[in-house]
Length: 155
Image (cartoon, rainbow, N blue to C red; front, side):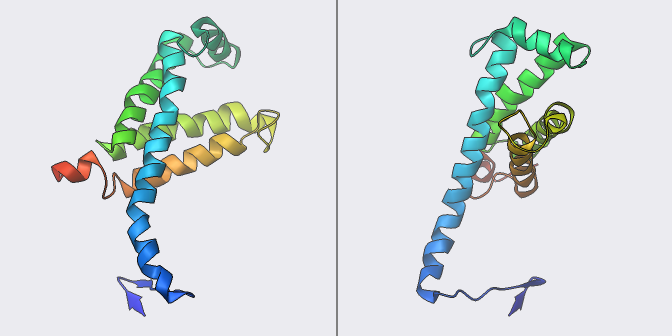
């Protein structure tokens, strides 16, 4: 059956369909909350040195040629703290997720890709996964369980 231009899948185990339908929005909200919340400690490190040495982070930005290092570190920190919090609660979700996608994809390509694919030697695997998750959030928006939905507006 085609609905809205998409082929509607028929479940292999039909009695589970209501369960999957009921869990779709809570699962997405959990993913969005987790993605946003996991960004915040990275930003706290860059802005305040709370979860690591701010001087070491600045030295890292300088060592990889990200200049002006201090301004970029602060900008990325703001995206991670403010954007992460907004993504987590689902407020202004799309612009926050777009900003986070850009910073995370930049880190994936510029910092991690030269180390290959696997995460163990510092490769792109993990950061690319996060960039794709954030891109999905940017496309989908806040979802049914979000502040965006509660106020009836989204970007």
